[in-house]
Length: 183
Image (cartoon, rainbow, N blue to C red):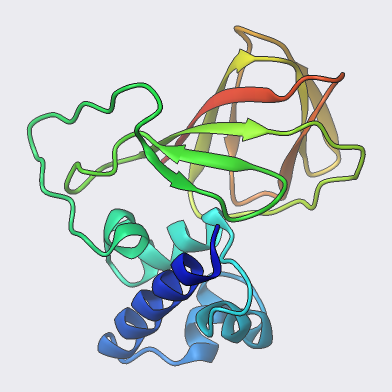
């Protein structure tokens, strides 16, 4: 994600937080990160993780699409996203996200195509509000939830409580791609 886009998103988050009269400390606490880390994100110095943006949108009763793009969602009957045209959200080096329903108003879930690149490192576990459904499209990966690890291949799925610490890591030398629905 370019520095310019990161700063635009940070500015929208700050404006929303201030309009809601919520302090930095309160919002940081609501999304379970330190105030120092939150400030670095809100100042545009580091990226917001996608999970943090989702939680911020929920806490501020805002639409994730508007935070990401600066434009409100505008469709309320159906929304079509053509292959490769979803809103790209690159919040971490560990994962790439493509939002598949950016224009739909009042969504009950957030569907993404997530790509996990090949990595030799140990991914950082994260947690966020809600539940999550993952359906494997390409490659193989392990999903770690708390201390349990589950191996997934094409066609496999997992449903998890995303308030529990979790992470994904590819297996082998090809990226993993999956449909991720956050509820």
